[in-house]
Amino acid sequence: MGAQLRSAILRGDIAPGTKLRLQQLSIRYGVSLSPVREALSRLAAEGVVNGESQRGYRVPGVSGTDLAEVITLRCQLEPFALEQSIRRGGDEWEERLVGVFHRLTKFEQQNARATRVDDWERTHREFHDALIAECGMPLLLHFCGVLHDFNNRYRRLFLARYPLDRDVHAEHAAILAAALARDAERACRELREHVERTGNNVLKVMRKKMPAAIPKDLELAANF
Image (cartoon, rainbow, N blue to C red; front, side, top):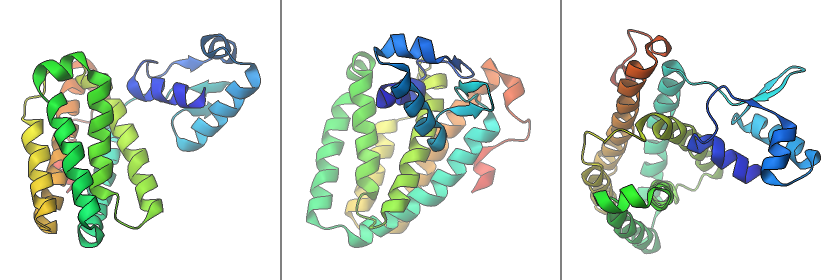
């Protein structure tokens, strides 16, 4: 049930700040209290839930400062991982990228994405994972995966009901084209700008819905 709970939190199915009660989770997932405790302990170690001394666990809150940190780290680590993948990746890496991009393109058509959100989410993540898969650094891949999860939580919480004001398909295509051309500088720039745009879109919505969570001087572009 740990994976199910993790997904529910990162998807935004369980609201930020929610107190996680063992008995309720036990009933929800049809397991005893012991697996619930173990799952919460592991998720706390990952930062997916917050442990409260003598008070159990709670879903982390959200803030513009936290989002900015996640975006800043993604924009540092993922381009580096992509640069290494471009240097190390061979034909199989290219074929995987092209194949995933082809599937992602289908979901990026407006109607398909609207009706098959979970399919799009999985394929979108697979595309980003494929870009950096050949970096040759397992620890780096782990860190990038954690940051992507945290970033996606914000995106799904705050952009689910808002249309994107950009051509995401074109951004993915530009990253892919540069990667296949082995133009690491351009590919890394396109990836960094892609991540940054998503962060700024989330911040715009957060400013409308919860302005107190966003410092007045916070601008993601200033961090890079």
